[in-house]
Length: 263
Image (cartoon, rainbow, N blue to C red):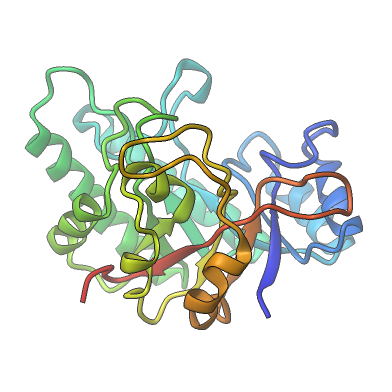
């Protein structure tokens, strides 16, 4: 049976961020994730987790100036010092929140930047973060994200993510395989996901907003995926990002964490 967690950036947005923990708990969730905890103090979030009996499943490394359109800084050569400092910040929050997994957003490479420069920077930063987080007992993940929602996002396919994994070559780095993003970019969700080994699983809503030639528009249901992902979900959280209505049917998908998608 999957363990369900709530994404507090997408659910309960009628409440303030701090109020969403209680709302998630009231709907029966046992864990939460969100993009960024850094607008609140770690103590304030820890209080809400304890008060509502929730586990912190995941959050991201600091991702730059979100309001200005930044979606991570890990591939930016002129932000390496900032990235390294952000790892220390994330570790402090993770330790306060008893969180054992942190996600790194690669970012959007500036127009004109040589792809190999961005990839080399990303690999170096991931290696640095993986080592620092390993020392703190925290796993590092990074994910391909579709370029429809984030145009220009640097890592958008599993093939590219695997190439970066090979370049980093660190035991504490996992690929976060998000079915929502990969349905848009690649389709054929189950072929790569079947090869996730030794990881845990989480999720995003799989209601695809529009069609592509390889990924027709549709909502992918739990029943479609559960038979092929049950072994992965036993180890981790299925994270919900879309509620049809309060305390009602949930539209979910799955994402796997893996040291390698392909066999």
